[in-house]
Image (cartoon, rainbow, N blue to C red; front, side):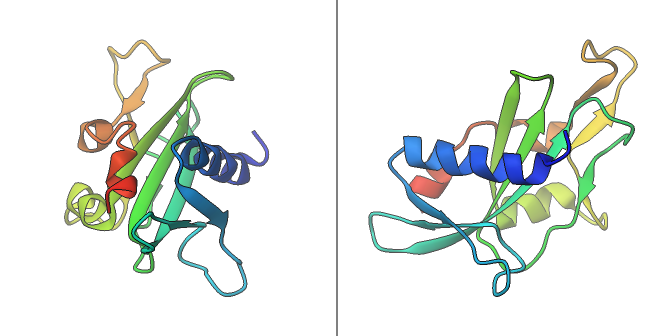
Length: 137
């Protein structure tokens, strides 16, 4: 997919709005570390970084940098045209999943995996569809 990053951002934005979370795109000129801003019912503002990838691609681990300037990371993993998975992590959870590595791995290659040999890493599977982390922040 040519515009996978932008498509992932819009999918996350739609998911937030569907859950009655007021959300907007960030202005790229001023906010390089995050993609979306959500305004919670408590009037608290949280910054959301969105990272998108395809499960079956040439990269064996689809690793991403975990930056400083956001409260939540949403990893969007596309597995075919209709199958999209969302992994919602606080910045602290993303850093813990990354551990001592330079980057956070989202997927890995497995010999016994059904999806063309790739699967989501065990470090992030527990965060699948955990949208309430953002809503309850």
